Image 1 (cartoon, rainbow, N blue to C red):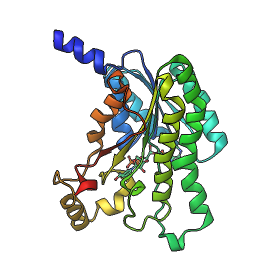
Image 2 (image 1 turned 90 degrees about the vertical axis):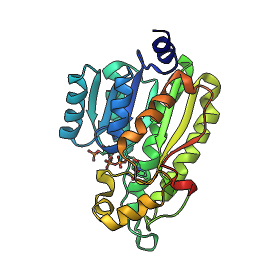
Image 3 (image 1 turned 180 degrees about the horizontal axis):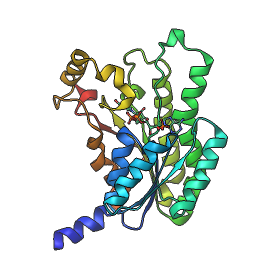
Image 4 (image 1 turned 60 degrees about the vertical axis):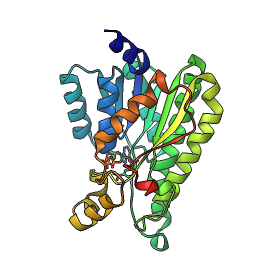
Length: 259
Ligand SMILES: NC(=O)c1ccc[n+]([C@@H]2O[C@H](COP(=O)([O-])OP(=O)(O)OC[C@H]3O[C@@H](n4cnc5c(N)ncnc54)[C@H](OP(=O)(O)O)[C@@H]3O)[C@@H](O)[C@H]2O)c1
């Protein structure tokens, strides 16, 4: 059918190789499924092997191509090792999604150096190092897509999450600098900005019905996010269709940020 061919030309990820950090849980898992179902071969990276294997099994059972690498993105050595191992699965990735993230939550006044170091390592330095590892290759091959998953806290302080927002603000700046470096070679670099999404990351907040309802009321859509809300935006930003969109922050938040 004509419309199917047109949609494939715009959005199909057939033949693409994607690496998704944090692809075993929450938003990253939904993005992984979306990219894989759109045709990409996807390698996911996280620490816990059971969750990684379960995600890959589920995708493989539906006929998708997926693989996993376990490693800690909290150290430079860990990032380098998983990057090399991930590239061995389906070849050098042309799509990199940095979704792994942590929110340790001590308020700023109570934050020790250890919380700063761990937060910056996982949320900011790992995306930077993976960009350095794969961005130049993408540029050389003339096609690439880099996506970072940031937070509304890149734009505003929220629930006393201390240095978490600092790491996410810097991640948005990283996307702009990467866009400046590589966009002319066909590599776009953007961020997906969640509002409040019900995932294991915010279990404590999600288990308080009153706060959950209050947060939903702050959106325009009238509900909080679910991980699957990221599927369409991720496929779009990974696809040929988004070739002229770079350095941007795409809010997937039901209008939370503009209400
Ligand atoms: N949920 C929200 O409301 C919300 C709002 C704004 C932004 N975000 C952002 O969205 C992204 C995904 O969050 P989520 O809510 O989907 O969280 P999640 O369900 O807790 O998933 C986090 C993922 O990151 C991995 N990860 C964490 N630390 C790691 C490390 N040191 N090395 C390797 N992998 C690591 C986790 O796997 P392992 O634990 O097995 O390593 C898991 O796969 C994060 O960047 C988060 O900051 C979420």
